[in-house]
Length: 420
Ligand code: HEM
Image 1 (spheres, rainbow, N blue to C red):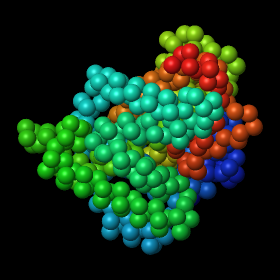
Image 2 (image 1 turned 60 degrees about the horizontal axis):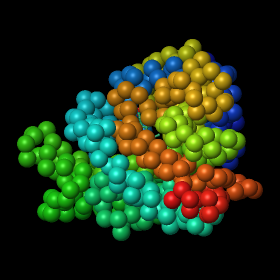
Image 3 (image 1 turned 180 degrees about the horizontal axis):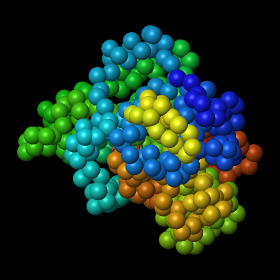
């Protein structure tokens, strides 16, 4: 589908370009200021940029279907499509399923992510964080992504689901392949490898459900299986495997990237890190402002089910929309001085980074607890933590998930030893 009359075309805009990946916000601000919706030929989506419009779209699941949320962004080769069609037997369960079917699945999962349930994971998250930090505390310099921000959320969510720690590395690689296929623009060779690995990832989830049925464990997968003993509407095997396929991905890329974005911002604004060290109560609002200013989910997708008008632009049914959370979260009509990273900002919590309405992020408490825990621990133990000079920070090439691929930090080990 191409642009419709009245809809400006953003010819030069490519959300997978080097320029955008390195610094998306000025580009998104320009787009928002020049109109509410633009057709983007580079991805064949319409991009929506204003806070009010995006909030309204997220609140209307009948008009704006979520079925496209996990669809491959770019055209796949016939070979890759065949591999996925034959091998992936997962069914839509959460972020890409519309109500009313979505409501049944969500009802079964929501109680498992309530704040009091997540609070029970706090101690485990602290233990994981401490163990990972202890491993590098005396080095004085580390790439904090492989050392901490990447393993921590994966350990947390895989343990929650019941996956053995030893499978973590493999699972993380498969999640990376899913990211490329669904949100990136992989070349034909990579498509083939990534599609094959996605099928392996799915097979793993199916086998895991079978195994937990035979030998239940103290984990979320077994809890979902157990629900069948007393509830006719409980999830069947394929739905449970689809849920853990979805959760194992949703639960770590997002959080890894948010920790990285928080660190990068807190360490690049002079004096901020020292304020956090002196006053740990500031950590919560610092995380919230990171979600607004530099979210780990910068865009999400919907498709129209009928003709609509967004702003002053008429849009036909079946139009695919990229909701630019990064533009909405910098909309000056909601956030005064949006380009200022202000950890005392009063309304940072109305950011849209966890979505809104029907699909509002199920893991938002868990994600917040993880990021607050690890940032709090780092600020306490490393008062002079700083970004290594001269590094170029790069970001993964996809339209939604944004966080540093590598972030080298330095500190004085003697100083850290005093706060261990
Ligand atoms: C901390 C960073 C995180 C961010 C920024 C984030 C962001 C999002 C966004 C934007 C959505 C889609 C919302 C919509 O369509 O309206 C979503 C949905 C979801 N997230 Fe998160 N997420 C994070 C962490 C997590 C974690 C840790 C988990 C689970 C362990 C998780 C599980 C989910 C699930 C299951 C959904 C689908 C909910 C539904 O469709 O009902 N997320 N998240």
